[in-house]
Length: 198
Image 1 (tube, rainbow, N blue to C red):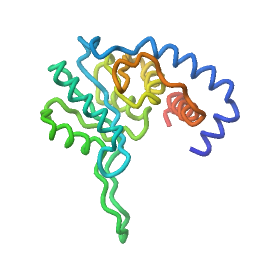
Image 2 (image 1 turned 90 degrees about the vertical axis):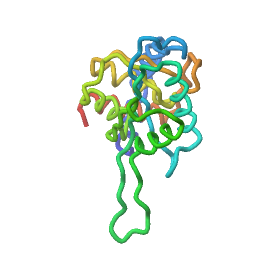
Image 3 (image 1 turned 135 degrees about the vertical axis):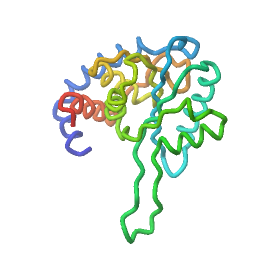
């Protein structure tokens, strides 16, 4: 993210102002766990820390099982990075796609595969939202992601003409955490990706 971090640093007052505006708008779209009736689809960001769901992702996937029980018609789109094959001659093991790993975890918890859609094109927040559009999924949906990603997800979805609601992890938190410089640089990167589709 070196170049994009440099772009953020060069124009940080502009990015900070835009970030705060989007953050304020995003906070108005946070729904409580009990307020999701009528939301048929949920985008779940599934970027893992290692070869298995780490604590943070495992908590998010546990929340998916609670959502699945509370909303029996809800479909979960698991979006994350594609599988990685090690280079020839490398002693590294192949890495499965993030959505495959998340799906296995959820199926082990009893969630049927018919309620899951796997999307391995979500290697960034922008790519997850763009892939949602390419899959021709509804414009109205709920996003479940790391709280730091929700402002980016909201911005990208609105830019692409969607109507996202946001669910914090853990649920019930109606305010987003303050962003550090790294998160604002990531926001700047997603804004540029939206503008130039890069």
